[in-house]
Image (cartoon, rainbow, N blue to C red; front, side, top):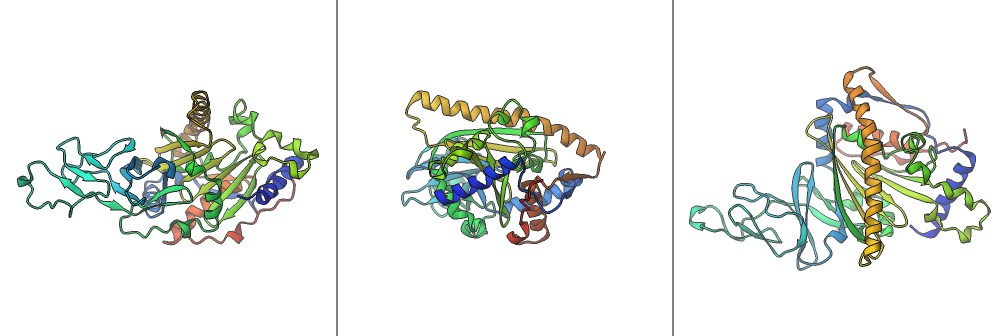
Length: 395
């Protein structure tokens, strides 16, 4: 994102903060409570994710030829590799023999040997060694191999499709957001690892917590609310995706500062909601990634939380500080957001009320659910971004 755009977004955020208001949706929005509890909707949600491009990590996790990394996506173990020509490949991390995982963690390797019976594969997925080959006359070396999935790197991130027959067109998926995401460079920053939350909440409830800051003053009174304003958001839709700007409490200090002296990143956080299940958070020193998946039932979800930083991690004190910030953010989501919405999930499952109400001051929340509903109604996601105009009149 260039400085002119950042300055424009900062102007918008400053005006909202000054006027003590937020971008507003045209009207309130009602969502059926069964969207979070229905087994039928749960299966449709899973199908929607399987047929959508999946952002699974940072390109910095495969920094050079010979690097590899394993990921769990929708319960499937995936092996990602970067081969000698620099290209990215993805495979089901499943041995052809007895379905053991052939790799774990991340690192550098040209070959992967199954820990069960030592069947071995190269980093292009080809089977290159089988002990006791006479027992497997139907298996061909170099002609058989791991099941490959569509994979690419784009806008600084690693992408796959869980549908091995799909055409993976991330540029079309992201549309006008592609260049903006790439410009941040966060996918090329140093990765800080992964933390996983296995939570008794529907995956959409997990996503909902990142879709508005209306709750900051109450849920995060002693944490995020000490840093960022509550119920104050700049909202822009990009088809099925959207961007939120959360102004920091310091933004009003810009009132008497000439724009040419503004440092926007000292005064705001940028949040991206990428359809259907990805949240990105960009700050001056962190590029957070939340990959949120349905679990094995409507009332369970898996959140994989990652973070990257532009800081020099070769300095031990800097590295320790970056990890401390990561842990702080993770603990806040775990202990404040997710713990609270466990109660929401219980209420939804009780059937006490048949709907949820999203306010005009929650345009990101509304947009997420409208995007999902449109996708489920059609095999192709086609959302008219012009229909997502926001009323910025102060209330």
